Amino acid sequence: METIWYLYILRCGDDTLYTGITTDVEKRLAAHRSGKGAKYTRGRQPLELVYRECCATHSDALKRELAVKKCSRQEKEMLIRQYSEEKMLENK
Image (cartoon, rainbow, N blue to C red; front, side):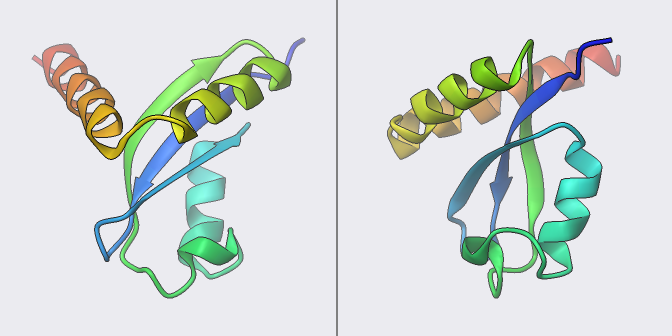
């Protein structure tokens, strides 16, 4: 069975965005919140998961992470808005 990888974006307490990849988004978010995640997110609480995307392989996740990290703030905010709108439609 193949492992599913996820690209995720966190909104930090200082309104910056952090992008990362993981196989378990909830576990990784907990690690960030406890100070055991990335150095960048330490001291930037609270952290909010604002975007999550499935990737087929680790390689795909790494490539997608690089692509998103190259996006402008405006492009990332557009991704987040689209994701939020899709989630709202799913919950109706």
